[in-house]
Image (tube, rainbow, N blue to C red):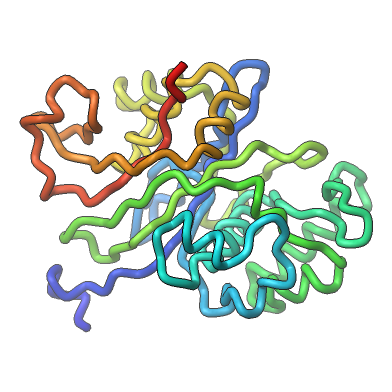
Length: 280
């Protein structure tokens, strides 16, 4: 397919993960993309990227805990193969933010990257993977780890509209920041990073000091409805029905319950969200 014709741009599969924490109020980890990157240059984003062939569920199934491909596919309403998105999200979080959602296979303990020697070893792993000197699966095998994909929940799907030089069908996940790990942006594709409350991000967006892609903005508006990470994770784990996004007259993405949803256009932005507070 030719990428010179917007209608013919191939849609690539991608995964991204929102890392949240109470610090002490609810915050989310955001990273700024390098201005020269073709897609989303200068935008503030969550860790994420393209799904690789190496993220194949048949390869990673023995290394994933608390969620099988069948379970993942049911959650994501796919016939099969959905575990690949979970694996891609875990891998991208490690490549871009240095966070590895994993347990020690023998003990079941959370991976602890707080010790300087361990931190240096895993940072070397990360550089090797980013430089294509080794595969992610080799790291998992060599360190005798297992991916804890059960702690990460699928919450949205967004498909890039026609127009940009690259288009993605991106699955969004959310998880709590693991204890004893500290995120560090890669300082290559990502040039800055910061923990921020959803409200502060929205203020900076409104003032023009932070640039966001429309799905990122919508997800932050969803997150702003919560008061704690526990509340968010409970809602995400509930796997609530998808709510289809529409675009209102001012160009904002709206969801059911928003004042102008009934009159908004459903043919501009392709997106579905299942992150909202649980009914009490």
